[in-house]
Length: 364
Image (tube, rainbow, N blue to C red; front, side, top):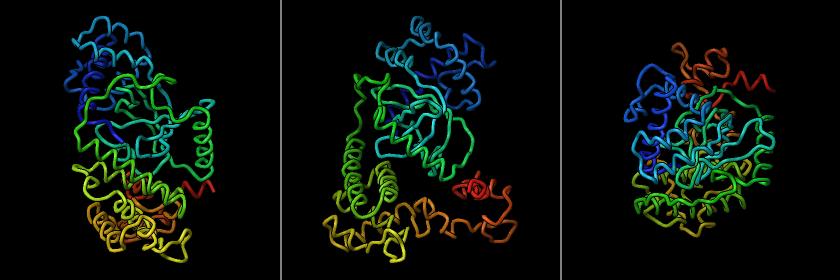
């Protein structure tokens, strides 16, 4: 889930003004930061100034007092809220319909934050395979939590043991604090978000209805892994402009979404667990079989989804997806899992494979 275009523009305007002031005060980088060109600056430059600011947070009060950018009272109030920023290491843990879950690393107890992305979705920035360990800054903004557009970290893959540990930490965080969606913690949203265009608001509302349907179906007939991938697909459809979810009944979209994920993962193969005949999906959602088939075909065509598609394969079945691992190396087609680790690293960094097989073998 992302902030609206107008919200993103406002955030970058305010954050750029603040960091421009920080650089003029501390002389972190030699070039003068032009707030109008902030987003086009190299990430290394922005990171240096950003990190300097959070080592000298007292500059925030100076910025508010001097107001060098001539901000309005409402804009200054937004910036003032950044004194409650949360800075540190996080596991980008799970993509949900309403936000992405950032789980703190190394704190006791750990906390889970519901964070919105900016111009690009977190899935576009980070990729589909989680968890990912990053250094990030979380900020309050218009009654929600966002990040500041900068993530730093390493391409580290995690084995099953680490993932089980993180699942347990996530469960404890939810039981202890819930998923935190406002800063400072324990507060509720007080500022109004800018009015969104009707299509965006309707798509979000319909998305929530569809996700409730697919979650309930997967809980009863499939499992949480299926539910998570269905939520991901529903979110992609909601973010398209204009969103196709605005046309048609939620029941037909829910059926088409589950059908699509089931088809990719051979849900109707009796050798699979769980196993389910695809027409039963339509029956559960109260739509005709032809309607469910048609909606699934539309989704697959729209997003170019195919069987064995790694983006929509359940994580537990990636190892069995031989098409995913077949790559061309030095002119020859081969299973990259049998190649040297160096070749696997290159393929991983290019986004061709979801993890480095050699590293996973070492953890077993």
